[in-house]
View 1: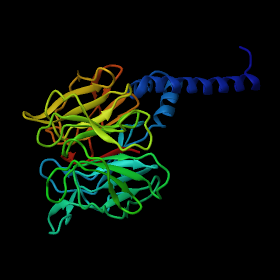
View 2: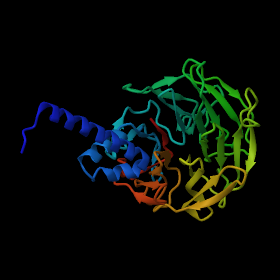
View 3: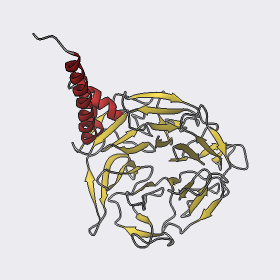
View 4: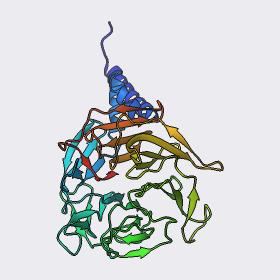
Length: 362
């Protein structure tokens, strides 16, 4: 065998690096579940898959209450999608559940929720407190409270803009300290806490599924009271600038539900996952195709029925975890390519599971 020359060794190193890069592209094309499978193929495939998985954000869960009937918690956990392990993160300043969360300019934002002393008395009630965890920071910090007062069971959508000091969030629906659902949409300035009213929803709702579409519009479905309604909140015409956003009716979902998960799939469809129906917790799922012919189609059901759980879409998959259910610690992933749910080997670390957590990808 001919001796290995310096040039030959250099060629081998360059080839190995390029192979890892190729496998990283394959992993990105394969999606989250496909990347996990590549970890067991060969050394280059494992290196490429790890490289891709290392670029993905963590699923961050904060607060919530133990199932069943537990007290609010300050715990915060991040699911590392490369290792499938939950990692402890800085705790909330205020223990709470049924709060709204989103990521603004890389910072994790927590708004409202039910908390001790949230109302005029010292019992559990909607709070106006807002917190922020900056990327790489060792603790949450409190921001100015919401000027609109305490609110829980609302949806939070980050706003793309660069004018405000800390960023802005759309706070959609929810219920205030009077325990009445609202149709209000408010633009929250995080630096001041000022809530500016926007065009309202068509229906008052709380505990609904909501998410921002790829084109920036927002879809809201279901809600407390067993609603089957669906609406889209956005500009009156696509491409219209500086026009007031309004709501538009969408086809109703097939089953009345609340406390369900909502997310946008990689193909642009809006998915509604699980929740509570007239029959109790459900594992059923459906997706809305947007276009000239808007319609809901059934998706395969989850393995476990659950409500008030974490639900996010990432890398061609939907991840769900925890919630109010007999299996409240379990986690699952829906692979859009395979079209089926797979159980994940990473139950929530909280004994008994959690429901009503805040969640976002960070």
